[in-house]
Amino acid sequence: MEATTALVVIPPEQLDRARQVAALTIASPDQEANAVDGLAFVQAVLRGMEKERVKMKEPHLEAGRKIDASFAAIKAPFVTAEGNVKAALMAWKRAETARIAAEQTRVSRENAEREQKAREEEDRLRREKEEQVRKDADAAGMSKEDGELLAQLEAADVPALVPAQEPMPTQAPTTTRSTVGTATIRTIPDRDAIQKAVDAGERSIDGVRIYPIWTFEIYESTAVPEKYRKDSLAGGRVK
Image (cartoon, rainbow, N blue to C red; front, side, top):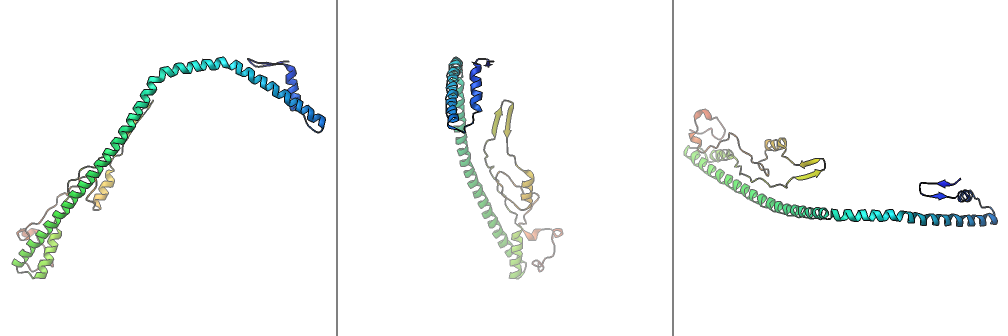
């Protein structure tokens, strides 16, 4: 009985010979010779099959090449568009990243300068407060030591100045598009973390304005009404 597939018919005698060769054992010179002959037979059949396979497949390969060439021509403008827009997006992203980095450097520097000016202004106000309190204490007949202590206490009450901070620029969010829609990934401020930092005494956070709420400054201690006064070691001798 011949062995067949959809395209190939193999003679039954070749199949029988192949089965015999597959079952060979070698225990003598004669069996070795039979094995060599069997190997040659099998290899010859395989070479013939491969030649026929290539011959039968060639028309299909040619048809595939024609299809590939046809689609390559149709796809060409879209492939070009894809490459161009990818290059443009990458160039823009690099330029935007560099621009934002430079802007962040500028904002950080200018915010630091504002912070420094605020600290200097605080120091100036405290020095003025100390000087004024010393004069008032001397005029009130306080000792130099008590006047100095009172001046330091009053100066410590000068509220901290919180300069307006320019928000720190951030990178544009990355938009990812697929066949099922668009997703934009954004990083948003953690308000709870910011509030905890402010409660802990933080007074400078990039991109955040921190406002003092219901604060005050004593600019003339002797003019403060009696109901807003209390006894203190430094002020015990005020008359």
